[in-house]
Amino acid sequence: MNKKIFFYLCSLIVIIIFFLISMPIFIGFGGTVLQSLGLFFIEESKVTFTFFKNLINLPGLKKSVFLTIFVGFLSTFISLIISQIILLKVFSSNYYLLLQKLIIPLIAFPHVTMAVGVTFLFSSSGFFSRMYSVFFTGLERPPNSTLFPDDYGFFLILGLILKETPFFLLMSVNILAQFKSNLVYDLGKTLNHVSFGSWIYFIFPQLYKKLKISIIIVLIFSASVVDMSYFLAPSTPSILSIRILELYQKNDSSNIALVSCMALFQFFVIIGLVIFWHIIEIFVRKTKTLILIIFPRTKNFVENLFFITCFFVMSTSILCIFLCVLWAFSEIWSFPNLLPTVLTFHNFFSFANNFYTSFLNTVYISGIVSFLSCFIILLWLEVSYLINFRNKYIELVFFVPLIIPELSFLVGISYVLIKNDLNGNIFSLVYVEVLYVVPYTFLILAPAFRNIKQDYIDLGKTFQKSKLNIFLFIKLPLLSKAILLSLAVGMIVSIGLYTPVYFIGEGEISTLSIEMINLSFSGNRKDLGVFTIIQMILPIFILGVIFYISKIFVKWQY
View (tube, rainbow, N blue to C red):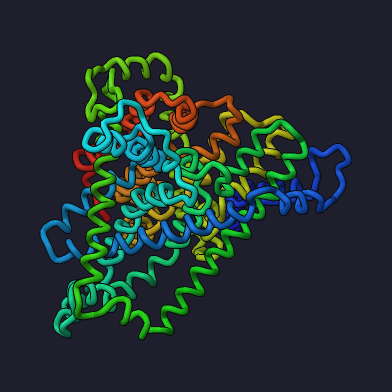
């Protein structure tokens, strides 16, 4: 093939992939903007700002904004601090390797599983209420308590901390391996710093530089989370995400415009939250004296205080998982008994009979989404290599679904699909879910692909192998482990998705995440326990299979 034609063909493929990934997001965001201005579904179909005025007059809006900012900021900050305390406690010990092995299974659990566990623990008929009744009050019925969920989102913050702390741990462990962290840590010790002081003043500044993007992603997610909010957020009023969904569920064309207004409003609130975090970061960097007062270098008090908090969080996490297991196997568990009276497997048989369709949908949709994401990224990497094209700013398009609130573009995508009669379509759902999985696939495959030694490729060229043969028989075998890991992570991410299935599936497509939220309204704790266990076991099973295949069958490494 002529080199010029080949270059144009490869360039066309790069452009097509770029538009396939960016187009739905920009169309969705544009659709949300148009809805907010009264277009599409309003009969008069003319631009109006009436719905923004109606949004401002919504009762409880200020409280919803406060909750969104408060939950997003505090959960991110505490998760970050707790992750660093755990790391400094195990960094120089034999438990550091054990921590690295435990992080991935914890991350694999969908967010909603922790929300269910917190519900089982703190609700009026939860485990702590049972303990209080058994040891203090002797009540035989659950108290009529308004403690859970609380008015300020503290239980939602707790649930987010339980899930985001392992993520920060994983990212921090990866960064620690990129510089001589042991030497830097020991340097702080030689200057008479306690462990906490050595970490905060010597290790953490270097970690933070590379954690910034991860922190922003967590901050945006925590402020816009939907599935966990159904279980743990205050109800009157709730955070902005839940209020958007409540308006969306009302069959009124004017509500569609109001939903779009609120989605855009949430977008700007969260952008403001990110800016606020950045301002605090600058303030902390410039007021070093204040930091020295809050975090003394030679005293253990602050370290011990944070360690107690860490112990409470980790114990809560373990207890949540344990309670989910107990409820999954319980047949009779009356209040105020601390343990089930009768255990049974019947709950799992009931799940198999009633929800097998949701289970199968979850598995095969996640498999298709993961495969397509892997294919797209491998194609992008190979074609961009062949034409010597690499632009980090253009590649940022893969991460857009993670760095903007999802409702700001999902609302618009949903309405565009409805207008073209494509909602509730399995192909539409797969396409949208690919947008969520592609960032993780790129993060895994891009470094592996670009670290392949050029010597291997040059060797293939000396044997006059074609570019296709070099890709298929040299690069892909060298990338086998990374490809398998990306497939596993892609499936895990897809399994935990709720909001895309809710908006794009339009009730026509049922998955485990959708059914789990539906069960939260029924109050059936046995089924909730089973769903939680299935959603915890499924990702671990996928990881186990992938690691086994990788260990037994993959022989090559780059």
